[in-house]
Length: 103
Image 1 (tube, rainbow, N blue to C red):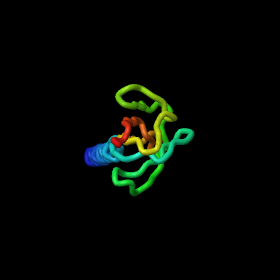
Image 2: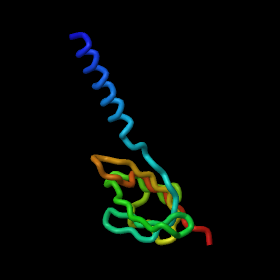
Image 3: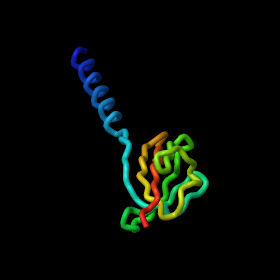
Image 4: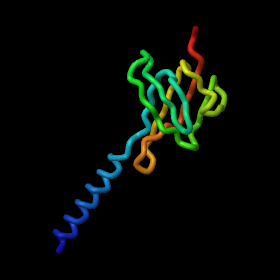
């Protein structure tokens, strides 16, 4: 009986540890804005390649030139740092920091 209890405890611990390690940590990357849409941000990497689109969390912090702003204030060519996180199985942009590209 004692061995079964120990085995159940070990399996429970391993499953719990696995669940914790499967959570994704927020990831940050930089690039350039291509376009914004209703709840989306399309961007490239800093070299202008690898175009991809993020769904933007409705509670995302969006910062333009150090001040809070709206998603629709981002313009093509703006440089952005995007933080993504997984919520309810979906990867979402949770923070966007933008600045104007130097001309």
